[in-house]
Image (tube, rainbow, N blue to C red; front, top):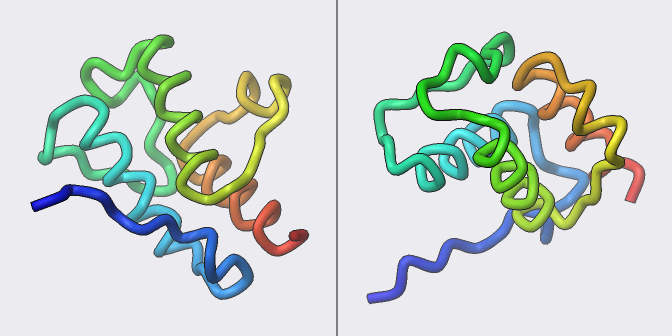
Length: 96
């Protein structure tokens, strides 16, 4: 059985912030191999064990792939918390 999950960018304009948060939580859980991770809109990278700079880049690529969006380098460096990533993802989806 394949563990392939459909991406959410097919229904671009209908994706809620809560759905985006759920998807990026799954992406980070899969990346760090830790199903106990619970992300909120206020979660910061330093609050999640093993979410180092290398894992962050892999996470960002996973989010971009999942939603079919592309973040700018300055954006990636400026995201202060998970909520900022969720809101920017939603904005990019809405603009498409």
